[in-house]
Image 1 (tube, rainbow, N blue to C red):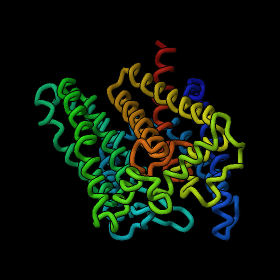
Image 2 (tube, rainbow, N blue to C red):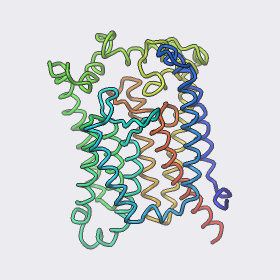
Image 3 (cartoon, helix red, strand yellow):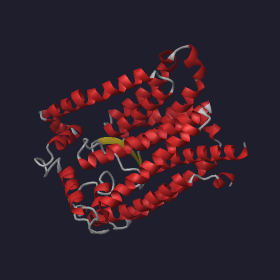
Image 4 (cartoon, rainbow, N blue to C red):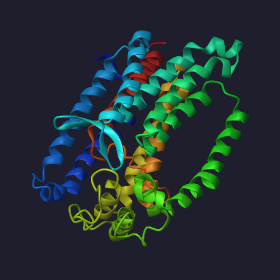
Amino acid sequence: MRRLKYLDYWLVVPYLVLSLLGIVMVYSASADIGNQNGGSPTSYLVKQSLYVIMGLIIVGFMLAMNLEKLRHPTLLRWLSYLAIGSLAALLLVGKTVNGAAGWFHFGPISIQPAEFVKFYLIIWMANTITNRQDDLATEGWWTTMWQPIVTSALIVGLIFIQPDLGGAAINASIIVVLLFASGFNWKWATGIMSAGLLAIVVVIIPLLVKLSETRMAQGSYQLQRMVAFKNPFIHSQGVGQQLVNSYYALSNGGIFGVGWGNSIQKTGYLPEPNTDFIMAILAEELGLLVALGVIALLFLMITRIVLVGVRSNSTYYALVCYGAATYLTVQTFFNIGGVLGLLPITGVTFPFISYGGSSTWTLALVLGIVLNISARQKHYRATH
């Protein structure tokens, strides 16, 4: 109860607003899907509402938790086994959705391990770096960090070969940012990041575009996405359908939108309207101003999380916050980039708005730990 007194409303209020808006938009975007599938138009509404309620419980649990328990070596070791084991098992028994074998099915619930791995990597990498501060100073950066780098590369590699390029990129971004924050030489960090971005823009994307023009693309869902990225209107009746109809949705919405529930594109034209492309439906129905408002709320949350990290007197707490901010930033960037056609579609959901239990619960875990850190900071400043 004491931590409720120090609750960070700069995080809680945007979280509640975005989660409630997400429930409303999932209902609007999915009602036609439910009817087309012969089910109830409220089926996704009920599920998303339950996911959000469970998310609130998770946030409360993380807020009340003694964070030192998350750093226990035995817990982190078993979480590591669970992460690697579940990702490896997906290759054998995982359900394929949108070209990636990334889901386990437990009755009506689907679990996506790559989502929960984001939380694990944040707490594990933050703890590893914190525990090795003395070794970083005496033994050198690479000698100290090569083992965590190899382990995290294995995890990202297992996500990549599902293939889940978006999930792999987000998890890799979390690792890279935390490694750079561990005391890595900033000049080297700047050089490596610049070289990496240059390689992506100049080498990797053009190479994928070339491969998408070959026969190899016909059997690859990921390369088909590159075809859609390069020439969406030429392939508007096939692989370019999502992006083209996303453009139509954004154009229809204009500044003020066509009104909630009145989207045309969600009625069978735009695939995945309640997950990957829910922001296109939101922009169509509620308009550009509301869409920008949603992005602004997320930016407020990210800025606040970074600020909590900067103000922290604990290396572990600071690194957790930087990892959380990276997670939200990269996921938002990939989703919006795909909706606008600025990036290839990666199947990444929009934080707090898109339908999905795994994403909702992982966000709750991450937000809960940041709220816990913020409350501890406020309590410390109030008593010292």
